Image (tube, rainbow, N blue to C red; front, side, top):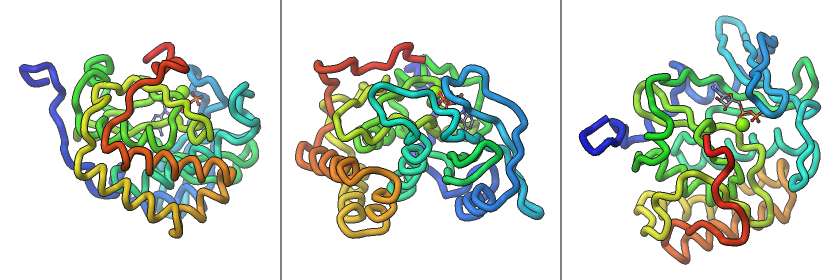
Length: 257
Ligand SMILES: Nc1ncnc2c1ncn2[C@@H]1O[C@H](COP(=O)(O)OP(=O)(O)O)[C@@H](O)[C@H]1O
Ligand SMILES: [Mg+2]
């Protein structure tokens, strides 16, 4: 921490390398590797399994959330959370901001589900301090969450790395066609979007309009949800500002950690 109480920052999202593996290799391993369940994450609200995945000489730890283990929610259709998590990764990949660890949709010991690379976090980081900080990775994440309409960005869904980067996880309740942004990251509300964010939003707009991202999201989400994603991107571009919390629904998750 610096004198101002802000964590030491990595201003660059870094290359597409996680746990020493480039993203393309990680995605292949997650997609094609042999998946074995090693344990269950007890604090998780869904059936969230800690697994190993092995493909020849490659191996990694990962999270596997089978669709069958999804807890029904009143505000999201049943059996859709895993696909939303993969859609969240696809948007993250286009931003180049490395918000979401490599994530795929695949079959597993409990049927189809999402499978995500496990991230070794820095346990020394004080989460309360982090969520109140002005860390550039969180500023990017605040824009990203407004795009994907994240309804659950709490402290426990932030994974700080020893190198200063911060990943986000648990994107099952994203992409509703109705606005539901619920997050602890409101410190930039009403602030002008950074130039890099404006550039990334322009890229997302193009990619949603007639690029691979639009095609991929239409496989994973409803057409209305994809259209609403593009509307949110354009709203951000038009306003040029980080959004304000809504008064129409609880804008902070509970509990916040
Ligand atoms: N890819 C990951 N790498 C490391 N830790 C993770 C990862 N995904 C989840 N976790 C940890 O497991 C906890 C539960 O996972 P989460 O995705 O929030 O499950 P649920 O949907 O059941 O709430 C998270 O709060 C986080 O601490
Ligand atoms: Mg969770």
